Each structure stands twice: as structure tokens, then as C-alpha cells.
Image (cartoon, rainbow, N blue to C red):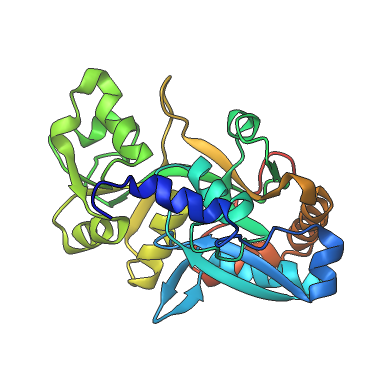
Length: 284
């Protein structure tokens, strides 16, 4: 391959039809096949991960229930996150990879953001199914009178996953004066371990991740407080599903299934089973 642009070579193979992925499908094709193909993120606890090669998490249980409601079996694929959500859509929902892997019918844990959908014309969003919040955990006595705002971490340390929204929120707060309090870790699990061991006085991140991680570790003496946002960082956002744009009827049916789960109390039970509380999106 020396002297040849490898990207052009691979593009020629794809153009020759040697790597054509199976397309995402509308509702009638999904029901006819008897299978709903769902792409979920790796390292996205408590929503999705693979433990010993087995998919686990809130989104796994939600996907199974959606498939049951539609009357099909779930085929769950755990995928790596790419550089951005746009790339995740491209690889999993509408174009696929160079190997011609089968496309998914549905992705979950997608930010319900209008600008995101506007710039991805080949993708259509389902109704949101949960609200996420940024929060901070601390043990009683660390802050006299209880945590009030981010100024309370001054002179102390807070564990965060590197390059996460809460990292930016704290880093830019109070004119950047709290940056010395931030301790960065490779992933949220490592950050939580630092907090549990007493290496840091605070743990910040998505509330569901904090709740689930501490519950599984048996930590019962931690207090949680939702964080206020800033002009740059939103402290709350909603998650939805995404399908290919020509599968809108599938998205509507999935939205109905999610609404049924919320109305029956099943969504709360799924979250509770993973040690997290459920906050319905504003639309519910």
C-alpha cells in the first residue's frame, strides 16, 4: 500500500459494493423480522456497559421492554462512542462502517437537543424518556450547614471524570478560582473510587451515575445536591432515542412504549434496580 492513499482505496471498495451495510428499517420491517436491533454505549453506566461480554444497564432493560411491547426480540449491540454524537449516528444508524456491519434500528441515551437533530437530517428522535442532572456528592460534616453552591469546595478537592460537562462547569465557576480543587480521573468509576476512599471530599457528575455507583458500593452516608448551571454549561438535559429518518413510524411506536413504561411505574422500577432515581422529562 506504499504510495497509495489508503482512504481512497477503502472508499473504492465501498463504492464497488464490497462493504454495504444492511439498512435501518421502519416498523413493519422490524416486526416482520421479529428483531429490534439496538445500539447502546460502552462505559456509560448506569445506562449501558458490558460486563463479561453481557450487556447490562438501564438502557438494556429499557430496550428489552420496548422490544417486548412491539412484539419482537431485542438484539443489543454495545458500541464505542466516537468523537461526537454525529459520528455515532453515522456509524450506527445510516451509513455504517467500512466492514459493512449491520446497522441498528435504534440508539438510546441520545441528548434530546434541537440543534443536534437539525444538523443530522438522516436521523429522527423519539420522545425523551428521562431527565439527567449534574450533581455533587459529599459526606456529612465536610461542609458546615450543608452544601450551598460550588464555592463550598474551595480549599477542598472534588473528583470528576476528565473532560466531562461537570469538569467544565466547576472549572469556569467563580472566574476559574476553583480549578485547583478539581481532581481528574480517567473515567467516572475511578473518580467514584477516589471519593469512596476519602482521597477527595466531593464527587461530581451526572446524578444517576453518582447514585448508582455509590449504591452498588454500599455507601450510605453521602449526601447529594443538584448543581446550578452557567451560561456555558446546562445542568439538566433530557435523553431520547434515535432512529433513521425513514423509520419515523418506529420512533412513534417506541415513544408510545416509553410512555407506557412511565405511566405504569415500570421506568421507576428499572432505575431503582440499578440504584438510581428516575426523573421524568418535562414532556411527561
